[in-house]
Image (tube, rainbow over all chains, first blue to last red; front, side, top):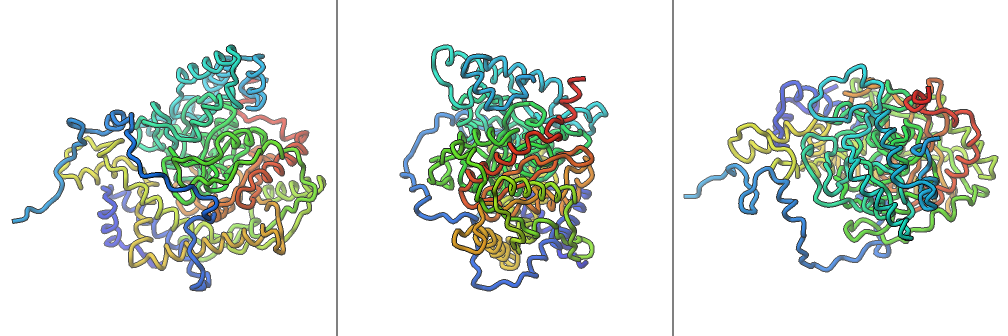
Length: 106
Length: 532
């Protein structure tokens, strides 16, 4: 079988996915991706009428069974300190991150 | 019989009558956990020991003290003449993919191992408000990505109580193993491709995937947001009914939870099956898959013992007055897995972008040069292989140049799968079925390490359960016997949108009609061993 995901394509994907992988992981993952794409290839055998709609939820959401939209109200969450305490690094109520890659505008 | 082996319904009844206390039930259950569970799943263990191979290992975190406070509160309320609710004193476990305030909520992943949830998932909250006693969080495949529980970062991973050399199934394997072993009468699981029904079949318990939108997803750590369904795991149909009645219904915190009224499921339970039309489809009696090496399409019949159990169930239902409709066509069944490989990966990749080492969870301890380096190292170290695989596949098939070929095509195929169900359940159509009876899985449980690592083969364990997730319709898996190896066989009933009551009614009729069968007297090995 021809490999759809070559080492070059794979490397681009890994960069976009923001993942640092070991060599062994990269080899395993690339092979599994190609195997899965072979399985996915079965979808191409189905004759599909262009008029066939896409389904993004199995169950249709009619107005009758859907909840009304909530009012856009500001609610103060009492657990804000708990939420903030989960952040690996904070300072004065702010979450701290390392340097953000940027270009100085002259 | 010990208190921990009683059904939820029996426990609630005894506790309500104050014949036993919630605390006594809890202590009996904690004792069972101490006897059968072995050491809990944890990070940093590379190898399991031969001793580990004798135990279930359902738990990641057992919150015994929290449970004791809840049980004492139930007893206090009863003493004061109050009714704590329909689950009074019933111990239950929660798949560790739901957040519960103040407890670790790990998703079976290193990246969330240190996360303590600041709020509680709606289905858990409803069970606790109904008097249920939460024992703790049980193991699962990492982020629910798997069908065996072997992908969890928390080791030892769960084993099958019927024979610990075998997997419990997944991804709600901790839930089904716990319930089978008497470690809580109920468990809250989730089902994205069969993750409640497949392990329920492997562990010989009842597992239900309700209709999409029937149970709130608020507080469920998301995998495939258009497919995920929380649902009950129980030992009896009545208990699954009781639990569904508690967790179902609209939730203002989940806009996809529907406003369809929740019927009184229990009232129809004993209505029988006389006159109901139950279908059998040859498309569920075989599995079709692509050989990853040759690309060849292979078709195999399902395990003959599983097929025989399904046919026997049809005979039982026919003898109770149901009309069995043979040869119901479900032509798009075998496209369920390839479509799922696309749709679920796109949704998973999108959902996994939030884990970045900034807001919560794991952050790499290594030196980083900038924010991008922090993301790469954190995600590289925090995620196991299965999340990585899903992120990469999801990005590939939804990339601008491939999206029409893969993602949009898969969503169209999803419409065809949905149409198969609409056709057979159409009240004015040719079939007019009340339910479709199928095997839950193509085989009974496989051994540990037999399939793990081959992500394509593992996915095909869900071939008979995933169509219901694409279509959104409800399904239930019931124990239907043991195979020659002594492993449980599961059968599945699938129904129309919001037809949970019908599935429970049929399941109850089947269960009651087969109560006297020899295999029902057998107990899982880990429980049997305690009596010796």
